[in-house]
Image (cartoon, rainbow, N blue to C red; front, side):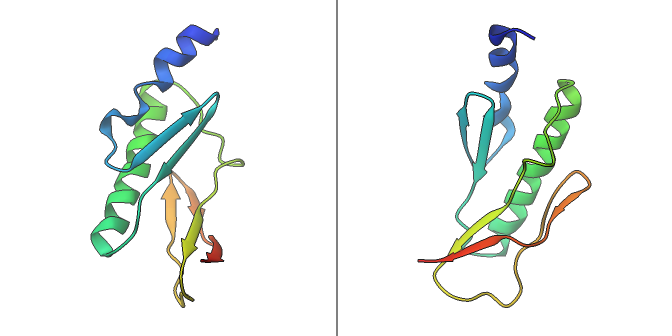
Length: 97
């Protein structure tokens, strides 16, 4: 696929997501500030929408390069688990700020 058709596909990735999306070349970052349980649910729904976009556009999101990163101010006893299709992000990288 050439660069222009690729851009046509990825530039619409954000349309169905409530979380913030940043695109750079062939990378996509989806993030959201988690302040309550509804934010957790919205982020998971957005990840499910990404999976649907992948299927609809016959594109592949590489599960080996997909990661969950959490930045937090304190210690969390139960880290959040997110899914992108069948891939589960169990161990987010935590940074104390």
